[in-house]
Amino acid sequence: MSMRLPMRMNLLRLLSTRGSRTGQQLLEELKVEYGDERQCSLPVILDHLFNMASLGLVTAANERYDEHHNLLIDFAITPLGLSRSRYYPAGFQFRPVLQPA
Amino acid sequence: MSDVNVMSAAAAVAQMKIHGAKKGLFYALGGGVLWGLTVLFLGTAFLFIDSRGITDSTFYMLPLVVAMFHDAAGGVFMLVFTLFNGKTKEYLRTMRTKPGWIICLATIFGGPLAMSGYLVGFMMAGTYAVAISACFPAVGAILAAIFLKEKINLRVWVGILTVVGGAVTISWVPPEGQFPNFYMGIGMALLATIGWAVEGVLGCFGMDVIDSDIALGIREMASGLIYALFVIPMFGAMVVTVASDVPVLFSIFGVGAFAGFAYLAYYKAINRAGVARGQSLYVTFSIWAILFSWAAGQTEPTVNLLIGAVLAVIGTFLIVGHPRELFSLRNV
Image 1 (cartoon, rainbow over the protein chains, first blue to last red):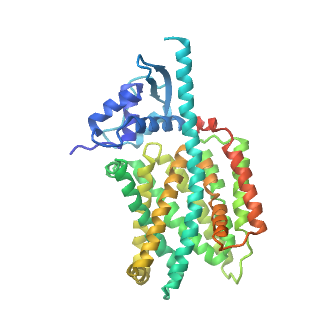
Image 2: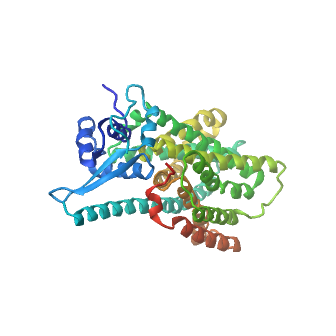
Image 3: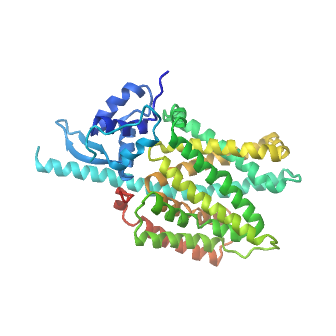
């Protein structure tokens, strides 16, 4: 069985390697790996993201409503978030593909 | 998209942030109340153990044996908790990462090291040790400001010192009896103070990238395991005595599982409100414990209790201040 990162660590890695993302986009990407797990839900993901924003690891870069009046918030990784890469297991360490916010 | 929509989206995000900040403060205060109740239950459990006539030459080390079962029970509680919220698989994933081991390191400081220091300090220096160990939030705040670059303004510093002053005042009762190893006891209490402060900072650092539920589960299970590694070989007879008395074992496990709630709130608090605010609101447990004990008819109100409670309330208001300060906890 292939190794998976803890979901919160994966959130940070995705924001680094794929650029800024909304909670909904991250949910779809994480469902591929954690789909059958109850923790893989939008409220839990948004909770992690807002928590990491208060800790300075990510930032809420932009917010808007879509045509269905759903609130969409773009989260982007910060330099502090990028610095956490060194604590990731070999093979999961990341480099930014986009400029950090 | 209209400007009105953009503004209301920003306002909605601000509202979500406020909600998250208030949750962090609620966890810190709630954790203090729950740990205050845990202290009351633990005291009752010790009285129950005493009434069962469990005693031998190593009876004075009973708190360490209780701590082992207590933390193991907390670990089981967290295992069940994470089973319900679908996070059980995260344990193994987390233990393959460095932050997982940082949580284990935090466990050594906050579990066996600090707890042993506290218990031995209490034996050697009486209640002075309790008062000294209540200073851990102040040390934690200093370490968090240095190593985590946590933002702590003057009002919050004054609040932290006021709450710690309240906790120390309540614990500051001249001890009865002789203490030939008094200064050694003070040293051991300082070890507890530093241990709990370091646990907060390391735990907070690890929880940057680890779910706080999983961090606490690892903390409780690792603590129970570390205790077992040195408690069982040294006090095996006492362990067998406690484990073979089913009502005693159930009472300790019950208190341990309840303590799991308190520690869950504490770990969420230091993750969401920061080490400085989280620990200093949590330490109000020393006031809650005595208030609950008074309500249960076990103690009488004292001048120290009144002064300590007033200081704690003033300090809490100063620390809570503006929840908006929790939008950005660090100078980064």
